[in-house]
Image (cartoon, rainbow, N blue to C red; front, side, top):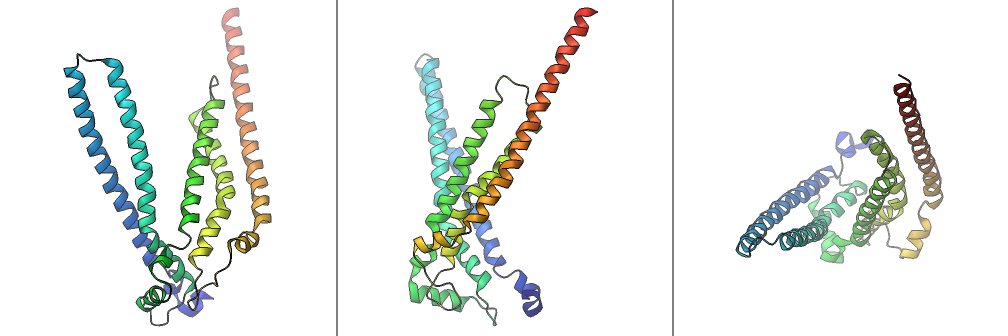
Length: 253
């Protein structure tokens, strides 16, 4: 229906602003990463000078490297979410233009209307849910990777099998965090202005989310992950049996 009424332009509605958001976000991340690496290099050089002047204390050097690594991780994490927050208004505009139809093709009037009626803070609607969704994804991915590494200790799990397990686990993680992402998308599109969704309380929004479908998806992707885990376990058992048979043949020879 959209293609029939608006053509290709309607299919890519909001795509220009999403491309702008992606370009701006990634450019700022590259600049931030280079800046952090520059300051890390300077700090490391200063630490090396101090260490060399202090008779080369190895323990002090190692602890200094660990401290710089922690600071670098915190700086990258803080910078990432700060950049996401700065670029969020462009993401909101791209999402709203997916559902708002402009016959003239000029989006400036719509943006001016949103700003005049609701103020600049309205361009950050749903940002908390969006950042929370990103944070949950990262935490769950980190926990998943740590669990895979812990469970594979002492076993000959191949890299391809680890990638398979991580991909299966990532599908489950994305389903678990999808309600928070849906909440952020809906809040972006809520406004008193024409053509947008009417604002609703958080409680009503949460109750209207497709929880039953999410539960079905968790069971589906969780079953696929469990099957993959079992297949990897069988593969390891077969490899161990083959090694034992080879060792027995070598002893017989």
